[in-house]
Length: 210
Image (tube, rainbow, N blue to C red; front, side, top):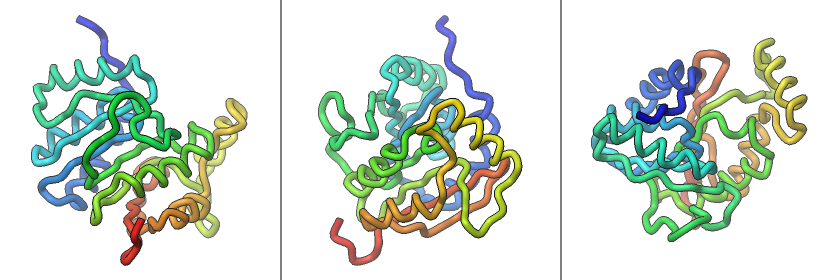
């Protein structure tokens, strides 16, 4: 039997994130996950939200069959086959036919700090294109904030990221909010999470025609 990828961080944070999703989301909907990675979040969230259809994706094509195998073993019927998706593409996904429906939720965890800034802008632009009228984008991970003390752990993490790749780094929440505002998305909820992370909810500005 093939070994499935495993993320200790995803194992630790999936329940706190799920608790927030259960409080925020309606009973039914259609979700698109960006950068599904190991698929542990998709597995946990789809199992706990049976009224939701979950579409996992990842930039790494090799991960898609492994995500599918995880869902097969979990016997989850509300998870669609994983698809390769390049967040920088103006057409999601970049390969094959584009998605033909809007999504009530676009979910993205722990991507923005390990990707170039252009990926943050592209995420907001893609979300603005693909969200349903009342849908939301939820992002999770560490952020820096102008008027909030930065933990020593996040300070060290940010330094290590930038040392590893000059295009990486923990993003300023204010910069992310500006990128969202440029496509008529606004921050409607900021939830502090364990390990100095934030769960952020972004929604279309009322009256916007985006």
